[in-house]
Figure 1 (cartoon, rainbow, N blue to C red):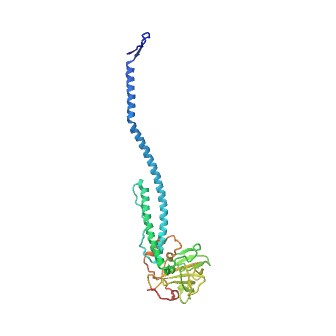
Figure 2: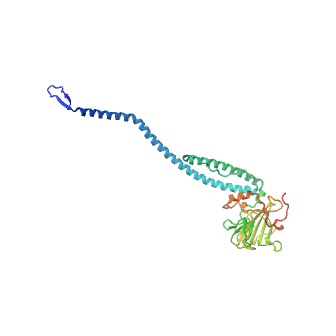
Figure 3: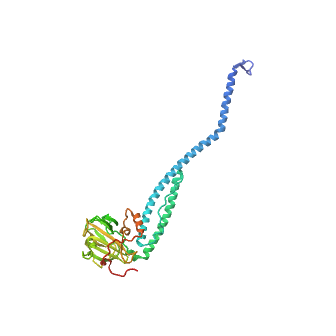
Length: 344
């Protein structure tokens, strides 16, 4: 037992006595010591705790900012994908021009490279950077090709005017029913090489000259002259300088005469179903002597139609680049080729 006495300063007052249990005093001292130790420890640890809380909040903000940046990058990648498709369409169009003009297509060739994949967290950033570089490279190549084409057209205006380059029919009034190439003949059911395009259109639809030239034949080939060409019914052929001949078969009415000069876009005939024909359509051929000077070879007319976009133009270009000689074709009648000095 611990006795505590409190003596007042005034001796007339009573002395106060307090008695404390020793165990309670010791317990109180221990508890107080623990509390003080806890307070001191908390004060010492406070800076570390504050730093940790700050770091957690900072990292959270960084993650949120990175998520925002990643989403923006994804949006940019989508926009770049759209730009890539647009540039690819332009590239194919320019390469069609270079093919038509016989220019060196190796200049500026190449599409878009596929970005390599890195760390998952960096993938959008890496993809965006690589695509940006690829787009810049593609635009430089395209500009080089455009410069070559523009220079050629400026220096060879006459050749350009005499090069087939447009649709022979209104774009909204035809359906391609038989393309250029191997097929089964609708009449004999045997394998056949189709040397042009069959463009189905209503009877009476205007047929246009696809380049400047001179009409070398207008009418129907006599049966005794050529059975093969007689079956095309009413035919118009146009010679474009000494480089190309275009053929328009199964016409209903012919609106030009042999020897007449025509300009690109002039109406030369109307669509019909004369000759061997299952329905009203135009048989359109483009023949060229660009590679062999002793004959006019049939070539895929779709390459020489620049004001219309086909669904498989990239494949058409690949085929056009392959050097092929079509030997199994009907020679053109002399009347179709016309007269005049051939190119050397």
